[in-house]
Length: 403
Image 1 (cartoon, rainbow, N blue to C red):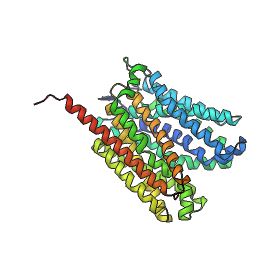
Image 2: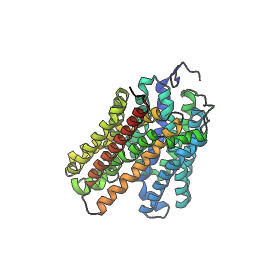
Image 3: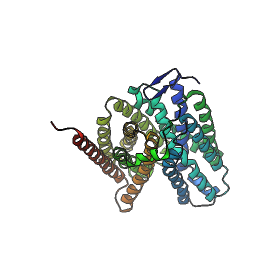
Image 4: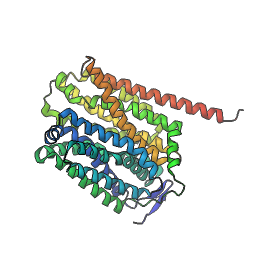
């Protein structure tokens, strides 16, 4: 494939929308694989002879794979051309999911979910860099958002459809379908994503320097904490609406779809805000998250208001493109590592939000107290961002000559 022209950050794709669609399709497959298991816990437990809570180990195993794989793959594959790396990651993801559908025992299934999780963070990180490099620099955040749209569409369509098919045809079909999507993604990336030559100066040591950069660490801190509120609410959204708003369990697919609509709106709006003024958009989005998640505490007592605020909670996804773009600006030579770690941080936010919300419920607070947990985490993310910005400005001031 020949490239038509170059942007300041890389070759511009001859067919940029097809390139972005190819990358987004991989995100769709990853998002479906990550979330579909939550709707297939009962059949998986029955087929593999374990309890439903034990199936949660497979979810945790996948998340652990994301956290381990992001820095490991980013450092070891530092000199691999990005298009080739993306194809390789999709092939590993395909193997992990196809093998998951054939797992003969629960222990094997848990191990294969770890394998499937390994490419997750690195894929999204590298895909974001490739998408941003294939458009003019003023459109970076929107290009990243269009790639991340695959994840949000997976929440809206992929996971509910996979759950439906899995419950009718067997849970194995859902994971086999994800494997097929991954293989198709690898082919489309080869056809439509521009080739980007490897950096001859790249090395594992240089990628690992991302872990030593103050601005990178603070940005990841915002992701780990500030994103947690969305997961605090989402993890317990159905029990909350059943207990407090009086909805029945049959509303579950619709609630998931409503949340998915919110994530799509948030991703698109957040990307446009980030392209206009990145450093103002991040605190503004965090304040928005704090407000809407706090109001969920009251809205969850009423069906219509509860559904509205489930959608609004989904708009918290606006933080994603902004933080991904910020990492591109501050990572310097460790672009791949920093971009990949953002999705590891995203999974850590998932774990943190769900854990803190679970504690609040166990301590006897209302189910909707997950919204108050969300507000606390959003404000915590804002505090981390403010501290990082203050330290950055103080450092810049000390470097400027007096007079």
